[in-house]
Length: 422
Image (cartoon, rainbow, N blue to C red):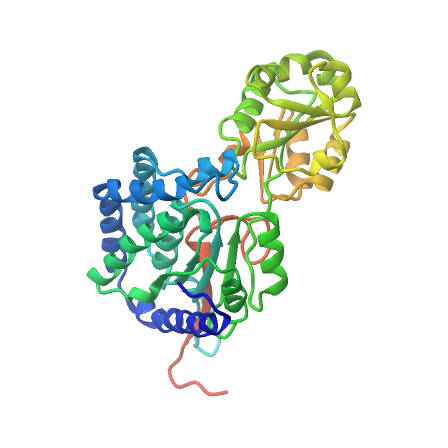
C-alpha cells in the first residue's frame, strides 16, 4: 500500500501507463475471448463464495469504525444471494452483442468513398465508487466487454471485498489471454491518489464517479478529462388528479420502501390538491404503517397529522432512508415547476389515467428517466435490458441514464476508397 506523495506519484503513473498500454491488445481481442472470460468470472463468483463472503466480513467488521449508515452497510454486504445476482448480471453482459466494430451507419459519397461510423471503446476509464463491492464486477465486466481498460478505485469501507473480487477478475484475464492490466484496482485508500489520477488526461480518457455529493463535486472540479457524473437520486412520485388510488399507493410504496438506500428510491411525493383532498390520508397510510417519516408542506400537515413540517432543504434531500418529503400542488404546471427546481435529474414518476397529463409530464420534466404509471425503482441497467450498469448518469453528455455497454463506447469514421484524391 503506497503512503507518501512521492510513492503515489510513481504508483499512479505506473497504473495509468499500464492501463493505456492494455487498450491495444484489448481492442484486438476477439469477442469470444471476452465472452469466455465473462462466463469464467461468473462461475468463479459462485465457486469461491466462501472466500468472497469471508473477505466481505472483514469489511463489515469495520462498519462501526468507518461510521457507516444502515443504507451503506446494506450496499456493502455480500451474500450467497447477492453473488448469484452478480453472476447472473455478468452472464447477461456476456450474452449482449459485441459492441466494438459495429457499423453504426454508412454512406457512399458521389466520388465513390464509403464513409462509415464504427463503434470503438472510449479507451481508459477511471472509475471511483463507494460501498458497493458488486460494482467492482459490474464495472470490470462492462468495461472489458466494451473494449475499455479500467482503473477501479473503491472506497476504504469495501477494501477487502473489492480486492477479493479483483483477484478473480485478473486470474480470469490471464487465463483467457487478455491483458491483465485491463482491470486494475487502486491499492491504496489514500485520497491523494485520486487527485493524481484526475490529472492524467494523457492516459485516462474518462472518469466516472459513483458516490456521495462531495465525491462528485471534487471529481468535477479536479478532473482534467471528461467526467460522466452519477449524482444524487432525489426522485419524485407525482400523483396527478386523475390517478387511480390503488395504483398510486402501490407505486409510491414500492418506489419508497422496496429498498431505501439506493439512488432510484423515491425521496419526494408531490400530490395534486384535488386528489389530496379526497385520498391523501389513504395514499400515505401504507408508508406510515411501514414506519416512513413524512416531512410535509403546510397543507400536507393539515391532512396527515403524523407528518412533520418540511423545510426547504427537505424538498431537495436524498434521504436514503425511511423519510419522504410531501408537497401538495394545484396544477400539473406547478408540479413540474416544483420537481424541476428540486430534482437531481435522476428519475421522476407520474401516476395518472390522463394521457395528455402523462405526455406533458414526460415532455417537461428534465430528468434522465421519466416513468408513467411505474415505480422509480425501474431506472436500472438490468431492468432496462442493459445487463448491468456502470452508473446512472445525471449528465446530458456523453451519456444519460443507466450506462451500459454502448454508453462506454464512442465512434470513429472509417473511409474506404479506391485511389480517390481531392
